Image (cartoon, rainbow, N blue to C red; front, side, top):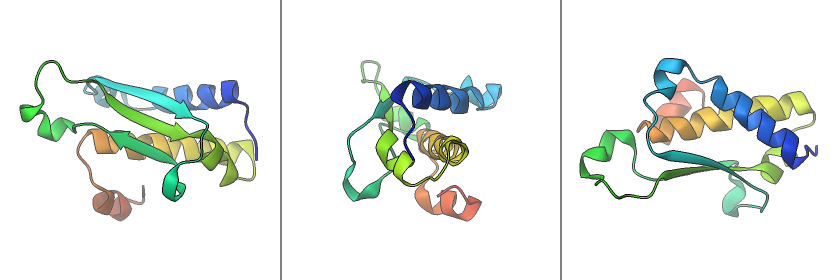
Length: 113
């Protein structure tokens, strides 16, 4: 399945807009990117940064956290645009959860791994 970069960006924006407002307000110093390159290990998304739960040691001049969604990897894992939409939503929520300090083990327990 192939979704054009512009449409994929719309799906990412839609997923971000779907985050409950009370949680969205708590997100701090994080940027979201779409990458077309194939990631190592078949990743669909990647969170890089210091989770909010560890921000006591964060410092005032730190670079923003980074959430990257890998468009081609997500598209390759899907058979329809609706599946891409769902996978983008799951991947966005998974990576945002890391921003809030939730690890992969807990995400797996919750069904978001």
